[in-house]
Length: 232
Ligand SMILES: *Cc1c(COP(=O)(O)O)cnc(C)c1O
Image (tube, rainbow, N blue to C red; front, side, top):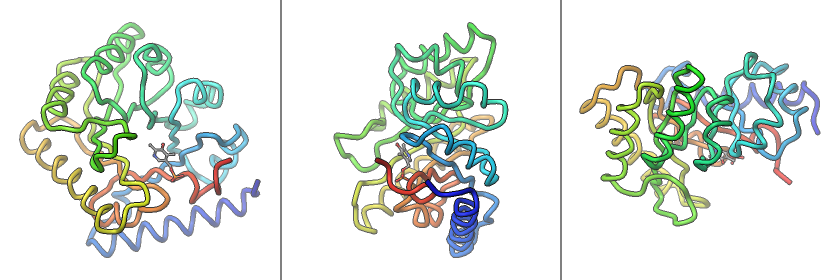
């Protein structure tokens, strides 16, 4: 694996690309957070990433995140970006600053119960499947989206921070943009209609499409391979 120097220059290059994409859309670069997605990479990558100045991390499985980040969650901000099974809600409540992948009212309720039991409030995003690909998790229709928003907003131990999506895999530029525009439009609608207290996070954009996502309004890009190289 690469040394910290290599990672440091890759981080700088990515920050430049985010800033350029933001500028093209008339946005401030500081409006976009950079998340390092460390799934499948060894725990040592987290140390390297911290040394390179990264502070926001994502994992997509609770057990892997727990093995890698226990003891580190005071040093960094860790989000779950993969699907949450209800039987992992207790572990998730104890570990993550934010769960980005709420797509069922029942999952929100389970997570809320465990957060309340340990006396904390957790940030959550509702995941929307903007590409319609069956392999993806996330809400696929408006009614379920509204049911998830109602559930989260009715649960005192959760705080609705925004929406998340995974763009179409290998999609052409038009499909990718259509997907991001759809999420951005839903985000603006929810903000206008419901006025959640701290609704500020539009999580979209991965290694292959983060510049398009920033141009379409993303406030949080989730990068794995662009930072750390190909996953095994
Ligand atoms: C793996 C993953 C990422 C990062 O993917 P890259 O293409 O390696 O940047 C981002 N978001 C989610 C939900 C993921 O599962």
